[in-house]
Length: 323
Image (cartoon, rainbow, N blue to C red):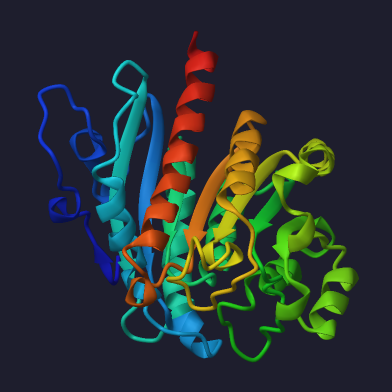
């Protein structure tokens, strides 16, 4: 596979123990070209090292380094799954170095599809939000006849017209063109200041549901839960995309488009756990980490804690299934 780099142990370092107390002692480094059928509950990390879409969208480049920054902050977190039938695997990176975003997206779609077909739970690490188009294509390849709902935690709709050129701002518009009447998309955290009137009209035209950032908080959880319940009921599978620029820059300064008025981690974490518990969530990505602008690795640490919460909830759900 072109521009593929296998997982490297140097990004998984930390304190050494005799009882696998840390994630760097749990992680299994795998080869994406030799995917095997998952024997237990398996979380598959895959890096989307690309900021071509961000550059095309006039954002701050640097997201290509995002996956490795996440690995470094994940590696020292504690392992509480030693008695759980869970495999945590790192399948390395797909790297876009030649500005050929479209080819890179095709490779990513194929990789995501193969992971899903072999029973893994993929968590893709970006990279720009152009990953979402590739990721969804992979899910669709794996489940061609299923109704797939998209939940996006984000300040932006990312529904810009991509007919001329794909960017990090076009992925859900691209998905809408291919899904037609099956396009089912809910965006939590939308900021009026960051989306033009035209984008709100596009969202309306495509039947997109959204919750403004001012309402995406724990104080409004009763309403959020009702919206999630209705959405979960309508679809067979769920794909979750988490854009780090949706969080307040107090938590996530290292992104291509920071915002001081984004949402807080607590409501995102509760939403994540709720979606996992639905048992319809099949694949997730965390995007837009830009280490070049991060402060004390705050954004990378946030990304790793979100992924940790996903792993923990996934392990819990699958442990219940196996009992």
